[in-house]
Length: 196
Image (cartoon, rainbow, N blue to C red):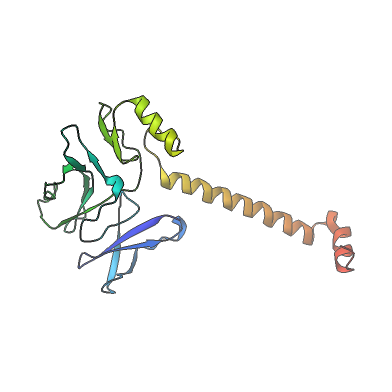
């Protein structure tokens, strides 16, 4: 099931899991219990108010500087953008409203092909990629299949949910025929007599 983010008036971000068909427009804030509204998220996890990094979010650039590549979220206008920063650089102000009330979160793996010039930081792999061959070798070593272009999580989940609904409808039709269709009369008699 997808993870959704909700933000209350105090700026707290709450994560919840719902199926796509049951996602509410608001939920109680996990911190202050006030109503939190759904916000559009580019990642599947929120790292909260303080920057927290996982090992894959860091990489050494060509000059030896450690690079972090977080998604940056503005608490005031909910604008989210991506930036590549050295370890020493402070989180920049919001590129939309200019507010300094921002926090960093590490993105969930998802291919970023906005820059095909090599080397570049591949957000999906969490490392610097030097060439197409280098990228393929990393994918092979990790046992993953590279996906070109944007990966549509919601579309993929929607297809699975639609397929599930189709299979349930087929099963329901079959169960209905077993109980009501004249062609299955013999089956019903044998079942009721305990022979099957």
